[in-house]
Amino acid sequence: MTDLAAERRALLAHLRDTEAEQVALLQAFLRAPSANPPGDTRPAAAVLERFLAERGLAPQSHAARPELPNIVATCAGTRPGGHLVFNGHMDVFPPNDANGWSGDLRDGRLYGRGAADMKAGTAASTIAFAALARIAPALAGRVTLTAVSDEETGGRWGTRYLFETLGEAVKGDVCLNGEPSGINNIRFMEKGTLRMTVAVRTKGAHGGYPHLSPSAIKLACAIVTAFEGLHGFQPALPEAVARALADPAVIAAHDAGLGQGASAVVRQVVFNAGVIAGGSKVNVLPDRCTLHCEFRYPFGLDRAAMEANVRRILARFPEASLAIDEDHSYPPSFADPADPMVAILADVVERDLGRPRPVPCCSLGGSDSRYWRWAGVPAFLYGPSPVTMGQADEHVTVEEFLHVAKAHALAAFDWLAARAAA
Image 1 (cartoon, helix red, strand yellow):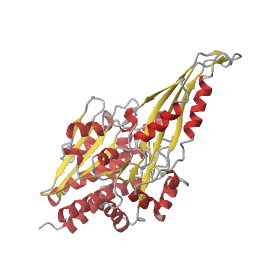
Image 2 (cartoon, rainbow, N blue to C red):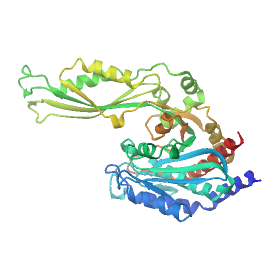
Image 3 (spheres, rainbow, N blue to C red):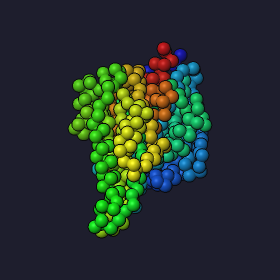
Image 4 (cartoon, rainbow, N blue to C red):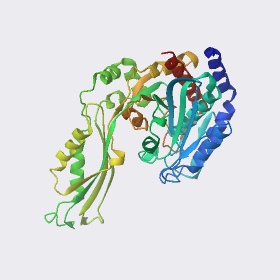
Protein backbone atom coordinates (compact mmCIF):
# COMPACT_ATOMS: atom_id res chain seq x y z
CA MET A 1 0.00 0.00 0.00
CA THR A 2 1.27 3.48 -0.88
CA ASP A 3 2.34 5.60 2.09
CA LEU A 4 0.69 8.86 1.04
CA ALA A 5 2.07 10.82 3.98
CA ALA A 6 5.62 9.84 3.05
CA GLU A 7 5.04 10.66 -0.62
CA ARG A 8 3.63 14.04 0.36
CA ARG A 9 6.68 14.81 2.51
CA ALA A 10 8.93 13.77 -0.37
CA LEU A 11 7.00 16.03 -2.74
CA LEU A 12 7.50 19.06 -0.53
CA ALA A 13 11.16 18.18 0.07
CA HIS A 14 11.76 17.93 -3.67
CA LEU A 15 10.22 21.35 -4.25
CA ARG A 16 12.40 22.86 -1.53
CA ASP A 17 15.53 21.16 -2.88
CA THR A 18 15.03 22.37 -6.45
CA GLU A 19 14.28 26.05 -5.84
CA ALA A 20 17.32 27.19 -7.84
CA GLU A 21 16.05 25.22 -10.86
CA GLN A 22 12.63 26.79 -10.44
CA VAL A 23 14.05 30.31 -10.44
CA ALA A 24 16.12 29.48 -13.52
CA LEU A 25 12.99 28.28 -15.31
CA LEU A 26 11.14 31.50 -14.59
CA GLN A 27 14.12 33.59 -15.69
CA ALA A 28 14.32 31.74 -19.00
CA PHE A 29 10.55 32.05 -19.41
CA LEU A 30 10.68 35.81 -18.79
CA ARG A 31 13.49 36.22 -21.32
CA ALA A 32 11.43 34.54 -24.05
CA PRO A 33 9.39 37.22 -25.88
CA SER A 34 5.66 36.53 -26.04
CA ALA A 35 3.96 39.92 -26.39
CA ASN A 36 0.32 39.96 -27.41
CA PRO A 37 -0.10 41.66 -29.78
CA PRO A 38 1.24 40.18 -31.96
CA GLY A 39 0.79 37.01 -29.86
CA ASP A 40 3.66 34.78 -31.03
CA THR A 41 4.45 32.56 -28.03
CA ARG A 42 6.77 30.04 -29.71
CA PRO A 43 9.91 31.18 -27.81
CA ALA A 44 8.07 30.95 -24.47
CA ALA A 45 6.51 27.60 -25.32
CA ALA A 46 9.95 26.22 -26.19
CA VAL A 47 11.16 27.03 -22.66
CA LEU A 48 8.35 25.04 -21.03
CA GLU A 49 8.65 22.19 -23.52
CA ARG A 50 12.36 21.89 -22.83
CA PHE A 51 11.83 21.92 -19.05
CA LEU A 52 9.25 19.12 -19.29
CA ALA A 53 11.18 17.05 -21.83
CA GLU A 54 14.33 17.17 -19.69
CA ARG A 55 12.31 15.52 -16.93
CA GLY A 56 11.15 12.68 -19.13
CA LEU A 57 7.71 14.08 -19.78
CA ALA A 58 6.09 14.31 -23.19
CA PRO A 59 4.44 17.69 -23.81
CA GLN A 60 2.32 18.03 -26.92
CA SER A 61 1.71 21.20 -28.89
CA HIS A 62 -1.76 21.93 -30.26
CA ALA A 63 -2.14 24.97 -32.48
CA ALA A 64 -4.65 26.33 -34.93
CA ARG A 65 -1.93 28.77 -36.00
CA PRO A 66 1.77 27.89 -35.80
CA GLU A 67 2.69 31.05 -33.91
CA LEU A 68 0.06 30.31 -31.24
CA PRO A 69 1.04 26.96 -29.69
CA ASN A 70 -0.78 25.49 -26.71
CA ILE A 71 1.22 23.07 -24.57
CA VAL A 72 -0.59 20.08 -23.06
CA ALA A 73 0.99 17.42 -20.87
CA THR A 74 -0.64 14.69 -18.80
CA CYS A 75 0.46 12.23 -16.14
CA ALA A 76 -1.72 9.44 -14.80
CA GLY A 77 -1.63 7.66 -11.49
CA THR A 78 -1.88 3.93 -11.01
CA ARG A 79 -5.43 3.98 -9.64
CA PRO A 80 -8.69 5.52 -10.84
CA GLY A 81 -9.56 8.92 -9.45
CA GLY A 82 -10.25 12.52 -10.26
CA HIS A 83 -8.73 14.65 -12.97
CA LEU A 84 -7.08 17.95 -11.98
CA VAL A 85 -6.11 20.48 -14.65
CA PHE A 86 -3.56 23.26 -14.30
CA ASN A 87 -4.09 26.21 -16.64
CA GLY A 88 -1.90 29.22 -17.37
CA HIS A 89 -1.12 31.49 -20.29
CA MET A 90 2.17 32.30 -22.00
CA ASP A 91 1.20 35.52 -23.81
CA VAL A 92 1.68 38.84 -22.03
CA PHE A 93 1.15 42.55 -22.52
CA PRO A 94 3.66 44.27 -24.82
CA PRO A 95 6.68 45.60 -22.88
CA ASN A 96 7.39 49.30 -22.45
CA ASP A 97 10.92 48.94 -23.81
CA ALA A 98 13.59 46.42 -24.78
CA ASN A 99 14.37 45.75 -21.10
CA GLY A 100 10.95 44.14 -20.78
CA TRP A 101 12.49 40.71 -21.45
CA SER A 102 15.36 41.06 -18.98
CA GLY A 103 14.48 38.37 -16.44
CA ASP A 104 16.81 40.18 -14.03
CA LEU A 105 17.03 39.02 -10.43
CA ARG A 106 17.50 41.94 -8.03
CA ASP A 107 16.83 42.16 -4.30
CA GLY A 108 14.73 39.02 -4.26
CA ARG A 109 12.59 40.07 -7.23
CA LEU A 110 12.41 38.76 -10.78
CA TYR A 111 11.75 41.48 -13.35
CA GLY A 112 10.25 41.33 -16.82
CA ARG A 113 7.04 41.75 -18.75
CA GLY A 114 4.59 39.11 -17.62
CA ALA A 115 6.37 38.38 -14.34
CA ALA A 116 3.08 38.94 -12.50
CA ASP A 117 0.62 38.39 -15.36
CA MET A 118 1.23 35.57 -15.60
CA LYS A 119 4.53 33.88 -16.33
CA ALA A 120 5.24 33.30 -12.64
CA GLY A 121 1.89 31.52 -12.22
CA THR A 122 2.28 29.45 -15.39
CA ALA A 123 5.83 28.48 -14.43
CA ALA A 124 4.63 27.57 -10.92
CA SER A 125 1.94 25.28 -12.33
CA THR A 126 4.48 23.71 -14.69
CA ILE A 127 6.81 23.04 -11.76
CA ALA A 128 3.96 21.59 -9.72
CA PHE A 129 2.94 19.33 -12.60
CA ALA A 130 6.49 18.06 -13.11
CA ALA A 131 6.88 17.40 -9.37
CA LEU A 132 3.64 15.42 -9.28
CA ALA A 133 4.67 13.46 -12.37
CA ARG A 134 7.77 12.23 -10.47
CA ILE A 135 5.49 10.45 -7.99
CA ALA A 136 2.77 9.42 -10.43
CA PRO A 137 2.76 5.78 -9.23
CA ALA A 138 1.59 7.05 -5.83
CA LEU A 139 -1.25 9.07 -7.28
CA ALA A 140 -4.84 8.20 -8.02
CA GLY A 141 -6.39 9.86 -11.02
CA ARG A 142 -4.75 12.21 -13.47
CA VAL A 143 -3.09 15.63 -13.71
CA THR A 144 -3.00 17.72 -16.89
CA LEU A 145 -1.04 20.88 -17.60
CA THR A 146 -2.35 23.38 -20.16
CA ALA A 147 -0.09 26.34 -21.01
CA VAL A 148 -1.86 28.41 -23.62
CA SER A 149 -1.58 31.29 -26.05
CA ASP A 150 -4.07 34.05 -26.83
CA GLU A 151 -5.44 34.63 -23.32
CA GLU A 152 -4.80 38.37 -23.49
CA THR A 153 -6.98 38.64 -26.58
CA GLY A 154 -9.85 36.40 -25.52
CA GLY A 155 -8.63 32.81 -25.81
CA ARG A 156 -10.11 32.01 -29.22
CA TRP A 157 -6.88 30.27 -30.28
CA GLY A 158 -5.85 29.20 -26.80
CA THR A 159 -8.03 27.64 -24.10
CA ARG A 160 -11.17 27.87 -26.21
CA TYR A 161 -9.39 26.06 -29.03
CA LEU A 162 -8.32 23.27 -26.64
CA PHE A 163 -11.88 22.81 -25.42
CA GLU A 164 -13.14 22.65 -29.00
CA THR A 165 -10.50 20.16 -30.20
CA LEU A 166 -9.56 18.07 -27.13
CA GLY A 167 -12.74 18.28 -25.09
CA GLU A 168 -12.74 15.89 -22.14
CA ALA A 169 -8.95 15.53 -22.27
CA VAL A 170 -8.58 19.07 -20.89
CA LYS A 171 -11.91 19.54 -19.11
CA GLY A 172 -11.10 17.61 -15.95
CA ASP A 173 -12.99 17.72 -12.64
CA VAL A 174 -11.33 20.81 -11.16
CA CYS A 175 -9.01 23.52 -12.50
CA LEU A 176 -6.27 25.45 -10.71
CA ASN A 177 -4.86 28.58 -12.31
CA GLY A 178 -1.91 30.75 -11.21
CA GLU A 179 -3.21 34.13 -12.40
CA PRO A 180 -2.07 36.95 -10.09
CA SER A 181 -4.73 36.72 -7.39
CA GLY A 182 -2.51 37.66 -4.47
CA ILE A 183 -1.53 34.90 -2.08
CA ASN A 184 -4.06 35.93 0.57
CA ASN A 185 -7.09 35.09 -1.55
CA ILE A 186 -8.53 32.41 -3.80
CA ARG A 187 -10.56 33.80 -6.66
CA PHE A 188 -13.77 31.96 -7.48
CA MET A 189 -15.76 34.36 -9.66
CA GLU A 190 -15.39 36.82 -12.54
CA LYS A 191 -17.69 39.44 -13.96
CA GLY A 192 -19.13 39.26 -17.42
CA THR A 193 -17.92 41.65 -20.10
CA LEU A 194 -19.72 43.49 -22.89
CA ARG A 195 -17.10 45.12 -25.12
CA MET A 196 -18.19 47.29 -28.01
CA THR A 197 -17.50 50.03 -30.52
CA VAL A 198 -19.91 52.91 -31.00
CA ALA A 199 -19.46 54.87 -34.23
CA VAL A 200 -21.04 58.32 -34.49
CA ARG A 201 -21.50 59.89 -37.94
CA THR A 202 -22.85 63.36 -38.79
CA LYS A 203 -22.68 65.76 -41.77
CA GLY A 204 -19.93 67.87 -40.21
CA ALA A 205 -19.30 71.54 -40.90
CA HIS A 206 -17.03 74.48 -40.28
CA GLY A 207 -16.53 75.02 -36.57
CA GLY A 208 -18.29 78.38 -36.78
CA TYR A 209 -21.46 76.82 -38.25
CA PRO A 210 -22.84 74.57 -35.48
CA HIS A 211 -26.38 75.16 -36.77
CA LEU A 212 -25.57 73.01 -39.84
CA SER A 213 -24.60 69.77 -38.10
CA PRO A 214 -24.31 68.24 -34.64
CA SER A 215 -20.77 67.51 -33.46
CA ALA A 216 -19.91 63.80 -33.58
CA ILE A 217 -17.54 64.27 -30.63
CA LYS A 218 -20.19 66.00 -28.50
CA LEU A 219 -22.67 63.24 -29.31
CA ALA A 220 -20.08 60.61 -28.32
CA CYS A 221 -19.55 62.47 -25.04
CA ALA A 222 -23.31 62.48 -24.44
CA ILE A 223 -23.37 58.73 -25.05
CA VAL A 224 -20.56 58.26 -22.53
CA THR A 225 -22.53 60.27 -19.98
CA ALA A 226 -25.62 58.15 -20.63
CA PHE A 227 -23.64 54.91 -20.32
CA GLU A 228 -22.12 56.24 -17.10
CA GLY A 229 -25.65 56.21 -15.68
CA LEU A 230 -25.39 52.40 -15.56
CA HIS A 231 -22.04 52.51 -13.74
CA GLY A 232 -22.42 51.48 -10.12
CA PHE A 233 -25.75 49.70 -10.58
CA GLN A 234 -25.92 46.76 -8.18
CA PRO A 235 -28.23 43.91 -9.20
CA ALA A 236 -29.53 41.29 -6.80
CA LEU A 237 -26.90 38.56 -6.49
CA PRO A 238 -27.54 34.81 -6.31
CA GLU A 239 -27.69 33.64 -2.70
CA ALA A 240 -24.37 31.73 -2.74
CA VAL A 241 -22.54 34.72 -4.20
CA ALA A 242 -24.16 37.25 -1.87
CA ARG A 243 -23.37 35.09 1.16
CA ALA A 244 -19.71 34.72 0.18
CA LEU A 245 -19.23 38.42 -0.56
CA ALA A 246 -20.89 39.47 2.73
CA ASP A 247 -18.30 37.64 4.84
CA PRO A 248 -16.30 40.32 6.74
CA ALA A 249 -13.05 38.48 6.00
CA VAL A 250 -13.86 38.47 2.28
CA ILE A 251 -14.74 42.18 2.34
CA ALA A 252 -11.43 42.95 4.06
CA ALA A 253 -9.49 40.76 1.62
CA HIS A 254 -10.99 42.51 -1.41
CA ASP A 255 -10.12 45.94 -0.08
CA ALA A 256 -6.65 44.92 1.08
CA GLY A 257 -5.67 43.02 -2.06
CA LEU A 258 -7.46 44.97 -4.80
CA GLY A 259 -7.59 48.48 -3.34
CA GLN A 260 -9.97 50.20 -0.95
CA GLY A 261 -13.46 50.08 -2.37
CA ALA A 262 -13.01 46.82 -4.29
CA SER A 263 -15.50 45.02 -2.02
CA ALA A 264 -18.22 47.34 -3.36
CA VAL A 265 -17.05 47.28 -6.98
CA VAL A 266 -17.28 43.46 -7.21
CA ARG A 267 -21.06 43.79 -6.78
CA GLN A 268 -21.54 46.57 -9.33
CA VAL A 269 -21.79 47.20 -13.04
CA VAL A 270 -18.64 49.04 -14.15
CA PHE A 271 -18.36 51.17 -17.30
CA ASN A 272 -15.10 52.21 -18.93
CA ALA A 273 -14.63 54.44 -21.97
CA GLY A 274 -11.24 53.19 -23.09
CA VAL A 275 -10.61 55.00 -26.40
CA ILE A 276 -12.31 57.97 -28.07
CA ALA A 277 -11.11 59.04 -31.51
CA GLY A 278 -12.57 61.80 -33.66
CA GLY A 279 -12.06 65.11 -35.39
CA SER A 280 -9.54 66.36 -37.91
CA LYS A 281 -8.80 70.00 -37.06
CA VAL A 282 -9.54 72.47 -34.29
CA ASN A 283 -11.82 74.65 -36.42
CA VAL A 284 -13.70 71.81 -38.13
CA LEU A 285 -16.91 70.51 -36.63
CA PRO A 286 -16.23 66.73 -36.54
CA ASP A 287 -18.34 64.46 -38.68
CA ARG A 288 -17.22 61.23 -37.04
CA CYS A 289 -16.17 59.92 -33.66
CA THR A 290 -15.49 56.36 -32.55
CA LEU A 291 -15.87 55.16 -28.97
CA HIS A 292 -14.32 51.88 -27.78
CA CYS A 293 -15.79 50.96 -24.43
CA GLU A 294 -16.91 48.11 -22.20
CA PHE A 295 -19.19 47.16 -19.35
CA ARG A 296 -18.26 44.59 -16.70
CA TYR A 297 -21.27 43.18 -14.90
CA PRO A 298 -21.77 40.80 -11.97
CA PHE A 299 -24.04 37.83 -11.45
CA GLY A 300 -27.63 38.98 -11.34
CA LEU A 301 -27.41 40.41 -14.86
CA ASP A 302 -27.08 38.44 -18.07
CA ARG A 303 -25.83 39.38 -21.51
CA ALA A 304 -29.31 39.96 -22.89
CA ALA A 305 -30.24 42.39 -20.11
CA MET A 306 -26.93 44.25 -20.37
CA GLU A 307 -27.17 44.58 -24.15
CA ALA A 308 -30.80 45.70 -23.91
CA ASN A 309 -29.76 48.55 -21.62
CA VAL A 310 -27.09 49.64 -24.10
CA ARG A 311 -29.44 49.55 -27.07
CA ARG A 312 -32.11 51.45 -25.14
CA ILE A 313 -29.64 54.28 -24.57
CA LEU A 314 -28.36 54.30 -28.15
CA ALA A 315 -31.92 54.52 -29.47
CA ARG A 316 -31.80 58.16 -28.35
CA PHE A 317 -28.86 58.79 -30.69
CA PRO A 318 -29.80 57.96 -34.30
CA GLU A 319 -26.36 59.11 -35.46
CA ALA A 320 -24.74 56.20 -33.57
CA SER A 321 -24.21 52.60 -34.63
CA LEU A 322 -23.14 49.69 -32.42
CA ALA A 323 -20.71 46.82 -33.06
CA ILE A 324 -20.18 44.27 -30.28
CA ASP A 325 -16.79 42.56 -29.98
CA GLU A 326 -18.03 39.00 -29.50
CA ASP A 327 -14.56 37.55 -28.86
CA HIS A 328 -14.28 39.77 -25.78
CA SER A 329 -17.89 39.72 -24.61
CA TYR A 330 -18.91 36.90 -22.30
CA PRO A 331 -21.12 36.13 -19.32
CA PRO A 332 -20.00 36.03 -15.69
CA SER A 333 -18.44 32.83 -14.38
CA PHE A 334 -18.73 31.35 -10.92
CA ALA A 335 -17.40 28.40 -8.93
CA ASP A 336 -18.87 27.56 -5.53
CA PRO A 337 -16.54 28.91 -2.81
CA ALA A 338 -17.66 25.95 -0.69
CA ASP A 339 -16.05 23.55 -3.20
CA PRO A 340 -13.56 21.19 -1.50
CA MET A 341 -10.62 22.64 -3.46
CA VAL A 342 -10.99 25.99 -1.69
CA ALA A 343 -10.62 24.43 1.77
CA ILE A 344 -7.82 22.12 0.58
CA LEU A 345 -5.82 25.00 -0.89
CA ALA A 346 -6.42 27.22 2.14
CA ASP A 347 -5.30 24.40 4.46
CA VAL A 348 -2.09 23.94 2.48
CA VAL A 349 -1.27 27.64 2.57
CA GLU A 350 -1.97 27.99 6.30
CA ARG A 351 -0.85 24.63 7.70
CA ASP A 352 2.01 23.59 5.44
CA LEU A 353 3.38 26.87 4.16
CA GLY A 354 2.84 29.06 7.22
CA ARG A 355 0.92 31.86 5.53
CA PRO A 356 -2.33 33.56 6.57
CA ARG A 357 -5.32 31.53 5.47
CA PRO A 358 -6.50 32.80 2.06
CA VAL A 359 -10.18 33.64 1.61
CA PRO A 360 -12.47 33.44 -1.44
CA CYS A 361 -12.59 36.62 -3.55
CA CYS A 362 -13.98 37.86 -6.84
CA SER A 363 -11.73 38.88 -9.74
CA LEU A 364 -12.09 42.37 -11.17
CA GLY A 365 -10.62 41.25 -14.51
CA GLY A 366 -11.05 38.11 -16.59
CA SER A 367 -9.19 34.83 -17.03
CA ASP A 368 -9.39 31.58 -18.97
CA SER A 369 -10.87 29.92 -15.87
CA ARG A 370 -14.25 30.95 -17.24
CA TYR A 371 -14.06 28.20 -19.86
CA TRP A 372 -13.97 25.54 -17.15
CA ARG A 373 -16.72 27.22 -15.11
CA TRP A 374 -18.95 27.47 -18.17
CA ALA A 375 -18.41 23.72 -18.66
CA GLY A 376 -19.55 23.06 -15.08
CA VAL A 377 -16.04 22.47 -13.73
CA PRO A 378 -15.01 24.41 -10.59
CA ALA A 379 -11.99 26.60 -11.37
CA PHE A 380 -9.99 28.74 -8.96
CA LEU A 381 -7.17 31.27 -9.19
CA TYR A 382 -4.25 31.27 -6.77
CA GLY A 383 -1.14 33.17 -7.77
CA PRO A 384 1.26 35.97 -6.82
CA SER A 385 0.53 39.65 -6.25
CA PRO A 386 -1.17 41.53 -9.12
CA VAL A 387 0.13 44.94 -8.04
CA THR A 388 2.84 45.42 -10.70
CA MET A 389 1.21 43.74 -13.69
CA GLY A 390 1.47 45.91 -16.79
CA GLN A 391 3.86 48.36 -15.11
CA ALA A 392 7.29 49.33 -16.44
CA ASP A 393 8.97 47.53 -13.52
CA GLU A 394 6.67 44.51 -13.51
CA HIS A 395 8.08 41.89 -11.16
CA VAL A 396 7.31 39.05 -8.81
CA THR A 397 9.11 38.23 -5.60
CA VAL A 398 11.05 34.98 -5.66
CA GLU A 399 9.45 34.09 -2.33
CA GLU A 400 5.90 34.36 -3.69
CA PHE A 401 6.75 32.50 -6.89
CA LEU A 402 8.25 29.56 -4.99
CA HIS A 403 5.32 29.63 -2.56
CA VAL A 404 2.75 29.36 -5.38
CA ALA A 405 4.56 26.36 -6.91
CA LYS A 406 4.44 24.53 -3.56
CA ALA A 407 0.81 25.52 -2.96
CA HIS A 408 -0.27 24.23 -6.38
CA ALA A 409 1.58 20.94 -6.00
CA LEU A 410 0.41 20.17 -2.47
CA ALA A 411 -3.18 21.22 -3.11
CA ALA A 412 -3.29 19.02 -6.22
CA PHE A 413 -1.83 16.08 -4.26
CA ASP A 414 -4.37 16.51 -1.45
CA TRP A 415 -7.30 16.96 -3.84
CA LEU A 416 -6.40 13.78 -5.74
CA ALA A 417 -6.03 11.84 -2.47
CA ALA A 418 -9.36 13.11 -1.16
CA ARG A 419 -11.11 12.35 -4.45
CA ALA A 420 -9.76 8.79 -4.45
CA ALA A 421 -10.88 8.23 -0.87
CA ALA A 422 -14.39 9.57 -1.48
